[in-house]
Image (cartoon, rainbow, N blue to C red; front, side, top):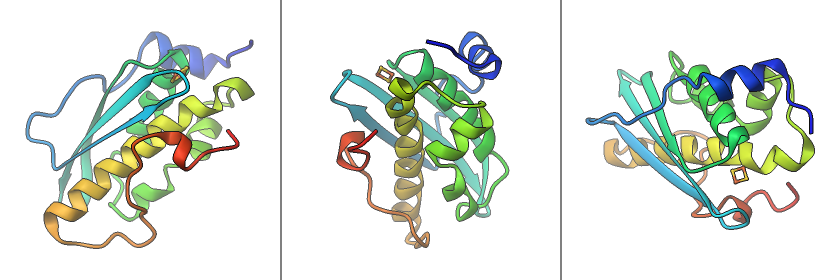
Length: 143
Ligand code: FES
């Protein structure tokens, strides 16, 4: 299995690992296939994602994709944050081996779940944001 240099870099030196104590939104999702869990914390001010952090029990690909996803989402409006999908993250990492695509779904789903949490707490609607799933398999069957 071949990993791109960017995947290796984000795996060896993951960005944004940790928690945000006073997070505006927190999202957690699991992957029953591998038993891994991902948690994402967002700090949002004036509708802009100021900070993002993650914690995972996931594999190297989960670490690399969450590292990239949290980097990509910083500075975006809560609406634009939806563009940080697993596909966008994989592109930014120059691809992932097919067997590891499901790992990248953890990052997307946990991120979107954190946005959902924020939206609920603040009584706002983020257009196109779907309710969170507990397991990535509920939304990404084929991957
Ligand atoms: Fe579980 Fe990658 S194998 S997240």
